[in-house]
Length: 102
Image (tube, rainbow, N blue to C red; front, side, top):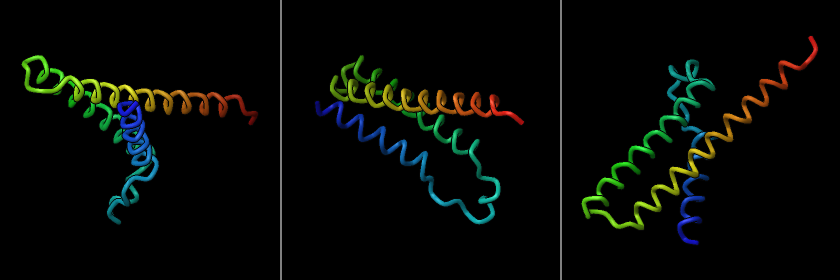
């Protein structure tokens, strides 16, 4: 149960960062947009995957605890599921817009 709650807490933190990114510098405020937000989210999930791979390799050589591996895998899985849900929601919104009469 502790693993699920920790993974959920990390997923909520990732979602919070996606929804409320830090304020960009004034010069970059005009350039920051939805696509930048998505790139950051994908990059964060990719980084989590790389971290999970590194922990898995450490466990394979006996330098990491299996609990750390399971926790990292659960966190990455939850982050990926969140990202896929956002993608599905975006596709649904796009399809809805395309069905609107002009």
